[in-house]
Length: 355
Image (cartoon, rainbow, N blue to C red; front, side, top):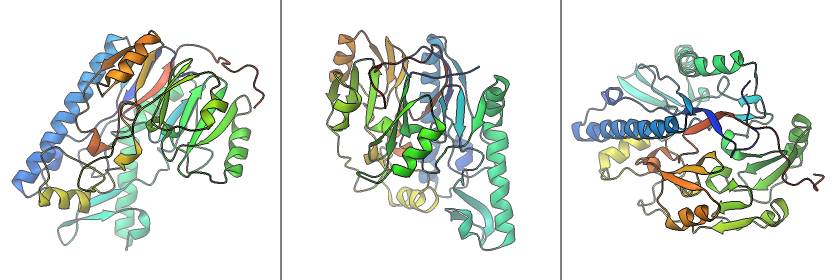
């Protein structure tokens, strides 16, 4: 049975994301614009392969979602967004998530961007929307979900529709659940979580977005963070916190960036057809967003000497791999991977704590 109790236990099985092939951008009429996206696809897959090779070096088995060639939706690059293994239960919204789509040749020979099924105007479009959701689930993730079931794991939906995989940090008996709002009233969420996880101590913390873009407990005793949260002293007493400055993107106010692709047609293409693909890059600090292989090795995408030196003090080696288009896909190494199985059993790092 697959399991994850601490995210620094030895990694054994991991999902790695997938983007489009270059051929899937053939619909873009402007030759120069199309070449940018074709290069984006090529380089993204090259970087995925570098990551996969590094994981295989550490004897980590990798799985990848498929991508139907006739599916025009946000590709499954950030595979952590919709699922997470907590203990030996896999929480997922893959089957129910309302994916964003645009369709080709539905009306006036143009692609039509649809944020949700609510914008569909007739029965045919609703039918197409459901067909595409089914394609992504059946052809994209089904083999991964089936493997998890074959291992004997339960698959459940999240206890709250606002929860996602990147918001949950697993440290033995302690689960840390991030939020999108600061100083909100999360009493109902706490109640749901306490009921769902009676064997855990659940902590709801204000992270202003995905927790894995805010802080990373790398190994017992050390946290890398860009946010000086007062809760660190309560949640992680006596742990050292290395604070990193949060860089301010200079991408002309846009929430995405493709190096060298600042033409009006590229910008218009993204804004019209891919606005639901790109995220808010100000939410994530990629020096924090790292994948832990075990207590002695981590993978990161930014060569930050401050982080690398601090990790070395704790006996942790940083392995840097490229992810050149992280500013477009809005994802770091932790975002584009999903740990399905790690060795180890549940530990209690704060045994004197009641809740």
